[in-house]
Image (cartoon, rainbow, N blue to C red):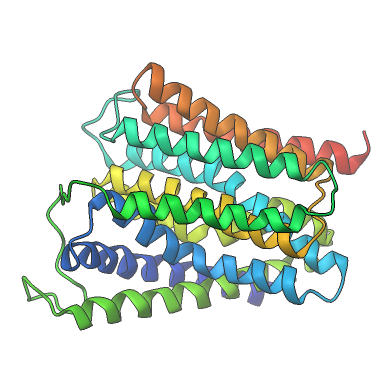
Length: 333
C-alpha cells in the first residue's frame, strides 16, 4: 500500500508540473495563432485536458467486454461534469482566497459574466436532454448521440470565431524558450503536445493506482468509480484552474472549466448513448441532480449579482451532499 500511495503522489506531481508546462504553452498557442483568450481557455485548454478521459470513455463503451465495463464509461460521462461543477469551481474560489491577498472575501471576480452565464445555459440545456434520454428506452436512441457531437461542433465554431482577440495579461516566457520574446511556433507546439502526453501518463498512473488502493482498503469497485475516479480523471482541469488563479488569470481558469464541462456534456455522452443502452440508475441520477443544481446556482449568481470566491467555494458542499446521497443508497438505509 505504501508503494501505491508513493506512486500516486508521484503521478499527482507529474500532472501538476505538466499542467504548468501546458497552461504556459497553450497561452502561447493562442497568441501565435491569433486565437482569443476566451477560446484558449474554453476550447484549446479544455479540449487538451479532456482528451485523455474521453479516450478512456471511448475504450470502455466501445471495447468493453461486458456490461460492467461499459457502465464505467457511462459513469465517467456523468462523473466528469459532477466533479467539474462542484470541486473544480470550488478550487477556483478557494485558490483566489489563498493567492489573492488583496481581494476581500466575497468581492467580485474579474470574469466575463455574460459569456460565462451563456455557457452555463448551453450546458444545462444539453445536460437535461441527455439525462432525459437516460430515463426512457426506444429504438432510435443511439442515433440521437450524434446530436451531441453536432452540439459541440456548434459550440466550437462559435468560440473559435469570436469577433475580438484579446490577450489581457502579459504572457510568461515560454518554458522551452525562456529568453525569447517571440518563440518559434514549433517550440510552442512541442511544449504543448509534450505536456499533454505527460498529463495523460500521470492521469493513467493515478487512476490505475487509485483502483489498486481501493482494493487494499476493501472498497467496492462501484464506490470507487462513483466517488473517487471522477476526481482523479478531472485532476488536470482542476490543477490548470489552480495554476491560472495563482497567476491572476481567473477568466482563463473559469473558461477552462466551463469549456471542459461542454466537452464532458457532449462527447463522452454521445459515445455512451451510441454504444450503450444509456439507462441511468439511482446513483447516476443523484450525480445528475447535484450537477444541475451546481450549475443552476452559478448561473443564478451570474445573472443576479457578481460571482465571488466565496460563492464558488460553496459548490464543494454540493459534492459532500452527493457523497452522503450515494452512501445512503448503497447502505440501503
